Length: 217
Image (tube, rainbow, N blue to C red):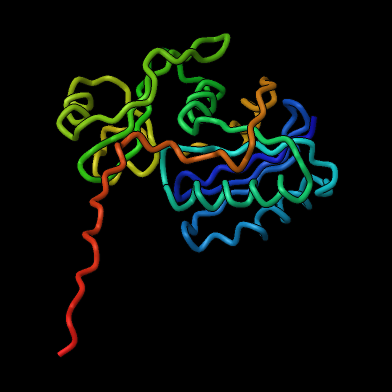
């Protein structure tokens, strides 16, 4: 099955084309919100010598990470599925990062982290083994104090855009290649219209008061 994979959860935004577990092409840019997504997809398809009509499934990383980037990727998938009825898969971006590090040779229990702003961090822990990866702590939100204590304990922590503030963290980014490799192992498809970025905070809002009637002067 030919898969188009899109991973926009960090400033390193990437698109890949795979045929099963075989990577045909991948392109990554670091322009953040200025990413020309359609052009990036077209360039990757060209590099893979693949037409849009050849793609049988789209896999998208749904975070955690850049809410704006993930929303943009989801919107593209929604439009594509609406137009063609193509199959869509949603992948955890930290799981894709964990698989990428496992394929690069990392082993053992590793915490993967994303700065969630507001003094909080997304954390997930995986066991990286010779045979693959195993999630041992699902993604959750943690306060800054817990994250900094984790770093001070000497446990390995990997994530995007961490090293500038936290030099002891290992900086790596999730990539579309491993979003696609995860998708190639699975058969669960979703309705793109129902996709949402990973966002673990409770959504709070205050209802506006009713409009006051002001008598004419």
